Length: 330
Image (tube, rainbow, N blue to C red):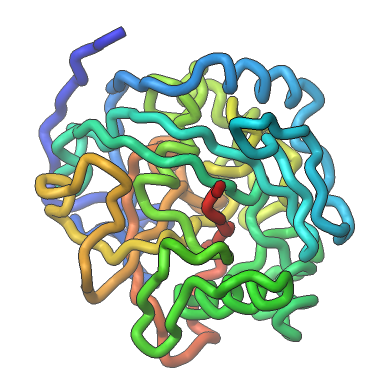
């Protein structure tokens, strides 16, 4: 189905998640921006039968995060494709996100337009945000301000997330994706990395055609996300809210999630149509998803945020920024 997106006039100043007036530069660590989505709908084309199978499997909700286990296929693969879910040696469960295409972005904000068609190759994504327990077990420390073993790790810089991805790859005998000196990503490597911005939005939308990644829209946000109205001023343990149609939890709210891409305000106008990786360089990197500190209208599938990738003082890093990992499917 093709629906014409609604349009709204953009404002030069926006109200941040914590009430500040900020410029349209998205997010800086002390002036987080809020997006003003419309009730835009977007056309999405995905593998419908795959989504139906995963959605049926998620009737019981996300459930608790399990203990580390040896790699295993939780749902068997086929001769022509990989398993739908795998339990990794480092503990987190990963969900297969099938290849497909969708309309990325929104006409509601200057940096999220134009809406453009993007195709995405299949990949695995962590079902949950990386928890403090998993992060500390692998990295030997827990930088989070609000402690909780099953809460998402936060106060992690983008560069910290890259180091974690490489450490997780090495711990499982996989090839690391990142050159930590240049910060370049080897997308052909079989190790862990951060999702591209396109992968993140595709996974969040999960075949839906609205602003929020589930058909109920803003009215259903409390069922799927921790945000300003229900989070009690802090992030919450992962996996307590309903999963989306791909079986992913907490894609909206709880903590913003680092993406692999450098932030480019006008990047969408020149973005490749297949597996875009973002600008070659930049000053800030992308975060997605909104956070516990944000209002419902800031927690959309298309809202873009950005922050400095490696603050000199980790102690001033945001307590509402975390991440999850992805891996190539083949």
